[in-house]
Image (cartoon, rainbow, N blue to C red):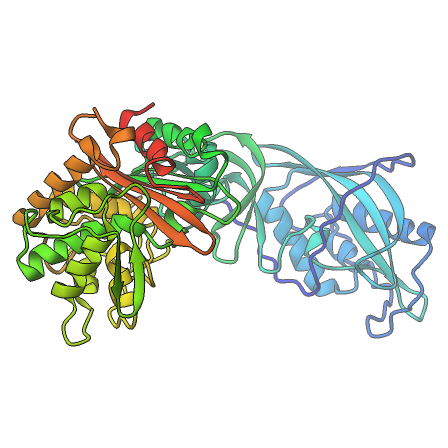
Amino acid sequence: MNRAVKIGLAGTCTALLALGGLGTYHLVHGLTSGSAGEDTTKEARGFDPSAVSGTPPSGAEAKKLTHAFLDSWSQQHLEGAASDTDIPDTASQALRDYADGLHLKKLSFDHILSAGPSSVTPGATKVTFDVTAEVTGGTWSYPSAVAVRKSTNGQLAVHWNNSVLYPGLGDGQSLTAGKLPAGSTGAKVVASDGKTDLSHFASLRDVAATIGKNAKPTGGTPGTGVAVVDGGGAGVKALKVFTKGRPAIVRTTIDAALQTVAERAVKDPHLQQKPAGTVALDWRNGHILALAHTGDDGDIAINGIKSPGSTMKIITSAALFDKAGLTPNSPAPCTDSLVANSQLFHNDSGVRADPGASLAQAFTVSCNTSFIKDGFRHLVHDGDASALHDEAVNVFGMGSWSIGGGVATTDPSIPADVQGGDQAAQFIGQGKVTATPLSMASVAATVRNTGFEQPIILPGQHQDTASRPISARTAGYLQSMMRNVATSGTAAPRLGGLAGVGAKTGTAEEGDHTNGWLTAYNSRMSVAALVEGGSSGVDSAGYVVRRLLTGS
């Protein structure tokens, strides 16, 4: 391994750009190892760093001193070069480490020009120049600059900091040449095919960047060049690449082909550019297959926390089956309106009253009053309305998840201590009940899989489990009811005719508008979509979900 330049310098780091122009002064010297040929008799110039003049030196003065400094540096008269600085001891060691870390063979400086007063170092004059260094593996050129100060006794000195070696080099950072260290060129975050770069997808650029910073890459071969490393020798940034290596990769669960479909789906013309988010999961193992969104408020697919509306009736039905012993044939009268806890509830337009409706029929047409009445009657006892929370958390696994790679997601919320009108509103996904497309895709997956598998984006990532597995009886009831929704119910206009599909639509009131939801599954995946401002689930989110289920 190449020895990196060990630099611990005082002062701030300044990123300076060299300016081309006339008056080129060219210094070139061959270098040898060690200190042979150093001018150790050169005396310090008597600069007093404690008494710096407030008046910058003239351009001619600053340029002359810079010539002397660079001449000594190019000849590897490092003590002489260091004596032209305001911190000779520190500069001497740093210049020596620069040569050692880069395995320097030859150094030259061109286009040495005075650039007027420094905007960074008070009382200094800026001098710019170009550096060409022959190092291990090739030749590296870059623009640089120094700030020249004058003390009150009239002596001049180069103000020393890390940027003298390379612009913007941070305190404690080093330079190395040869084999590029791990981390200096970054890891490539790819789809499950092992080759498609996730940063190519608009919805996944931030996700890929986060995973690249937090996940451990595998494979890859290093290239050669010049790099910045930190105090521990880890790569920070490649400055020059001589030969390209093969980047290490982080493989995710994303299906590249389905992600392409998802990117198009959230921009479906039927949505009229409304903000939308969608997530597709492999219901067998919880792998996130696609994740896409539009809008200016962040990633609403995994962080768009909204009331899920009638998609919550999946969990309400499960609680009625598990805790009240109901079946799909149990009575669930559908009335036009209903008062519960002094709050008036009504159905969406188009839902007809049916006093003789069963729970399955109410689910198919998404009758709010049926679920509020049955939920309030069977799941609220002596003011305790925590049954829905218990079902959501312990059976459907809704809680605090980590999908992996440091990617932040917003947790769903189904409060346990429900008060007032929310005791009724929760059963139709309103009140303080909130979820994301990610969590509702997981709900559909749990039904289809007959078991909860926590969503993840990195294979092998830890997956939380549900404390109480969904029963085969409850899953079977829900699959039958969701199938009816897709074939003859509220989702039929979009999903009717698709084989093996189960679904649930949702329309949630929010302020002065509604949001459209739809969650569904087929033989391979579960999908959920949210469209902010959607008039109904089927006429907004339905278009998104259909495109993912059909791959079109």
